[in-house]
Length: 249
View: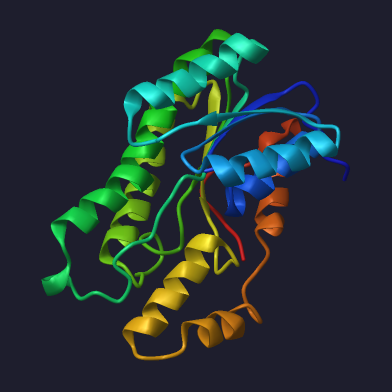
């Protein structure tokens, strides 16, 4: 099936690397106009160059998802530049505190992860929904994880944030489901900077070689582009009959 997103407008947070970058590239290749938001401007510009080189249409906005005003500006930019928002993908996320026991877990670390992963998702949905409503609806795809939904995590904060994203989507879906299709996406082990950083951090904490741990993990981790293909399908009209959580490799 040749999935096309021709003339659709997509906003993607966390679009500089990992799943977000792969999705931005895939959406642009499928014909969407993509607005990329991320605090990582260096990698964001590199991803933008790839899209433009391949003939795609995209715009990068340096955006801290923990700042509501910046998220609101991102959504406003999409509307002012391309007229509407058809799809929102919330990929912005961090993982801190890997392998730290609950009694040693710092509150500041917990707050930092919740602010990016959960509150950042909340801000994005909050400010995208009214714009989507103006043009009749759309699709919201929120990246969670098996951690916090099906099982635990190496990080207390990460699992809590991703479980929160799942609950947030289920709740908001009840409010906007008549015109906006929402999905929680729960990827498995992927070779993203976030995952590889967690593997290296855990190895170092255990007294092992971080580089060797990462090299070994790369043998089994999946490619973010695989998840991007699923997200491309979910953003398309062909996926209009799909509902609920989506679990991937």
